[in-house]
Length: 489
Image (tube, rainbow, N blue to C red):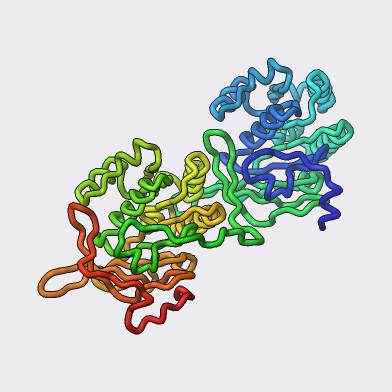
């Protein structure tokens, strides 16, 4: 397989995530077919491939059979691609090749004239790439399947003979399937890509799939992607190997009592789940850690799905936690969003963009129970698995809060979405009824790779933050605790 892949010369699309699935990019000097329904991003893919290529020193020609050239320029500008500037610099040429029915029916017509025009522009700018958008519109004007195939093979041979790396887009009907009359396109092309725009659980999602790639390996799964402000972004959902960073040394949680229960604190680069019913103090515990980390000079990204930044700051002031200095010093970044506002893919892209720009040492997600509102429980699971996978690869400590449904008891599955097994430490907050009042207790259920307390410890939330009402002892001196190091695997 490796020897075969080396023999295939490829052109990097430079579109985030795509080249990984394509194992390097599109076939150089060959034809790639892109099919998809309305809103799937066919034109965006073609434009981005062309614009990124032009910026990298490979000029290209864009042929549009459906939209006007000026509309293409405006659409590209909305993504930050200045086509007029690229045209003026001789790096891009746009050809508007829209045909009216009367022009075709008035006499014999073939694509030789069009190819002559494309060839002239390609020679003028030294083009290496060609994108033909909505090719099915051109094929439809022939009204004869035999003529369609003849002209398409003529086009294919013309592109190959000139060693142009080409992307041809056509419309699909249902679930990414083209009309039967265009199926032969897939056999002709060297690489076939399908873009799918579907609605699941009233949430729109997009999926990318490589159907075939002659002479090359490729990712065979469906991959989620989004159309962002700067083009397409694809997120591979799986990798052959796990590349998570090992757990690091202990870091303080911000509470001496909790540090004692954890035998020194959280492990750096670990994933910590804080679970409990409403009002038990999950957000207070998470922001205590955020404040302590920022005071140490570290950076924290806080993803809030339930409160605005102002509401979060105001609510924590009543518990003696002032997040404003950390925000002013730019050590704390709060990103808020309604879960329903975007699908899981959109939320993930937004979070990863913030991680790339802010480069935090720690990430807090408050609360993962709200992620189900991104579309479904499966969507929430996928979002969190991929997000946690990324932060673990980068050595970022991750704190997740989850609101459980029980008031006084424990849920069987602490995260509510089948996620507990992949976290490194689990802290459960309880309400306990005693003497005609309800008290709070904290329990460390597991701490991977570390000894930890097995006792429930009482605590209260005061105007000076969380205060333990007992003096937790390190697990090594607790009666009945052997100080084991397996962390409850």
